[in-house]
Structure formats: C-alpha cells, structure tokens
Length: 167
Image (cartoon, rainbow, N blue to C red; front, side):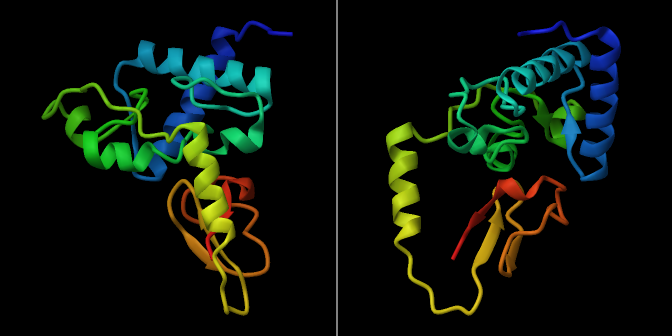
C-alpha cells in the first residue's frame, strides 16, 4: 500500500543523498525541485518494490532482474563520462553544474532483457583457474578477489548485493 512521502521525509532524504554524493565526488542536479521529484520517486519505488530503482526506468518488481537499475544505477558513470549526466539527470558533471555545458538528451544504454540474459549466460560460462573468485562492484567497478564480496563497497559504499562475480 502506497503511503505519501512527507516533505520532511523527502528533505531528509535529499540532504542525506546530497551529502553522500558530494562526499564521493559526484554532483546532484542543481534544479532542486526536479532533483527532489526524482528522489521522491526513488523512495516510492523503495516502498513499492523493496528497492530504490531508478525513477527513469520501468522496474520489473524482481530485484535480481533490476539490480542494474537500483540507484545509483550501473549506467550512471558511463553516462556521466559520455553525456555529462545520467539518464534521468539526477547526477550531473561539474561542467553542467557550473553552466559550462547544458543538459542534453541521453540515449538508453540499458540492454534489452534478452541481451541482459545472454550476457549473464556468457559470464556464467567463463572458466577460471584462480584460487578465489573475483567480484566487481557494478556501480564503481571496484574489484576484489575473495570468497564473498564485501558487505559494503569500500569505494562507493553500495551494499554487497551490487557486486557481481567477475571471474
């Protein structure tokens, strides 16, 4: 059952996200009203699905299927590198923040469901002679070789569920 997100809840979430984002070298869109609109929808998705899927994409309701679109999504950094903003415009580059560049339309980078499945099966077929598996953070790319991924990524602070077996 959907509940209303109070202005106080939204403001608290906005301040928390803003502090965390800036502490890790990222920038939120300077249009506070737009940014809060996106954050409110992340909170609504959290309530609806049990995870904060990106507000600019349609979530399936299956967390495993949607791991790549839990905010910050797997596509944030490539979009920032190529277009100076993420797909929904929540995260922006310093150039956009400073007005040196303007926000532009960003093409969808997320593969279609069939392509995502094919990618998973190809990854599953990789054979390794390493003593330990290698896990990769799908958000920042951090790699670690150990029995299990860390509880929290030491770089971007996302939870262990955002790690994928790399090798």
